Amino acid sequence: MKTPILQMTGISAAYDNKTVLENINLTVFEQDFLGVIGPNGGGKTTLIKVMLGLLNPTAGKVTFYQEGKEVPEISMGYLPQYNSIDKKFPISVYEVVLSGLNRQKSLFRSFSPAQHEQVKQVIARMGLEGLEKRAIGQLSGGQLQRALLGRALVSNPQVLILDEPNTYIDKRFEAKLYSLLEEINRERAIVLVSHDIGTVLQNVKSIACVNGTLDYHPDTEVPAEWLEKHFGCPIELLGHGNLPHRVLKCHHH
Ligand SMILES: Nc1ncnc2c1ncn2[C@@H]1O[C@H](COP(=O)(O)OP(=O)(O)OP(=O)(O)O)[C@@H](O)[C@H]1O
Image 1 (cartoon, rainbow, N blue to C red):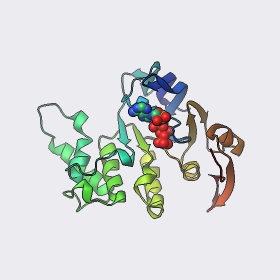
Image 2 (tube, protein in one colour):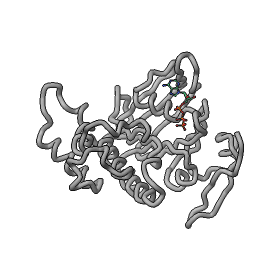
Image 3 (spheres, protein in one colour):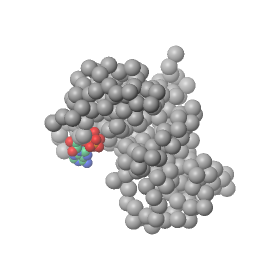
Image 4 (tube, helix red, strand yellow):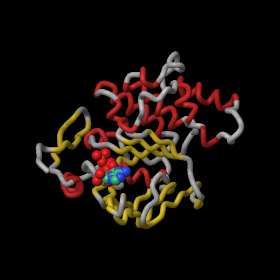
C-alpha cells in the first residue's frame, strides 16, 4: 500500500491573470520517484513552485501527510534550475550547504556543532571535500550541482525536488547523478523535472506529463501513444543499453 506524503487537488496557477496550470490533481507517495515531463512552457516549474509553497495557486489546495496523517507541512529540499543561480554571488561551498539548514536555525542563534557536523557529512557524501572554501563561481557545473544537491539534502527532507538537474552537467556525468539519486531515493521521495524523456523513463517510478493540465502514469510502462498524446510530440521507442527508451522524433511545433 502506497502512503501519500503530498497531494495536490484541483490546483490552478496563473501569472498576471494568465492561467498556466488548470485543475491539477497529483499525489506524491513515500519513496516515490516521480518524473515530471512536458513541453517547454508547459508549466513544470510552476507546478513545483506550487508544491514548494513559492507560488500561491489561484484554485485548489496542497495537502501534506506524515505517516498517513494530515500535517501542516513536510520538509522539502529543492535543487533549482541552473539558469536561476547567481554564480557571481560571493558564497562558498560550505556556506551554500549550510544555508540548507536556515529554516532549522532559530533567528538569533548560530548553527550548532551538530548542524556543522551534518554539513561536513553531506559535503563528504557529495564528494566535495577540499572544496569547502571555494566560491561557487569557481566550480564546474557538476561541482555546483553537487553543492546545491548538498544544500537540498542537508536538512534530511522528506521530498527532494529537482528542476532540470541534467542542465548542470555534461552527458558523461549524468550516470553518476542518477546512481546518486537512486541511493537518495532509498531514503526519501524524489520529484524530478526533466526534458529528457529517455533518461527519465529509465530512472523514475512514475510519470506526470504537464502541459497546462496534468496526466499521471503510475509506472514507466508508458505506451508511446500516451506520450505522444500528452507530450504533444511524436515519440519513438529505441533500444538503449539494456532498457528500451523513448525519444522524440524529428518534429516541428
Ligand atoms: N514569473 C513569471 N511571470 C510570468 N509568466 C511566467 C513566469 N514564470 C513562468 N511564466 C510563464 O508560465 C508558463 C509556464 O512556465 P514554466 O516555467 O512553469 O514552464 P516549464 O514547463 O517549466 O518550461 P521549461 O521546460 O521551458 O522550463 C510559460 O508560458 C511561462 O512563460
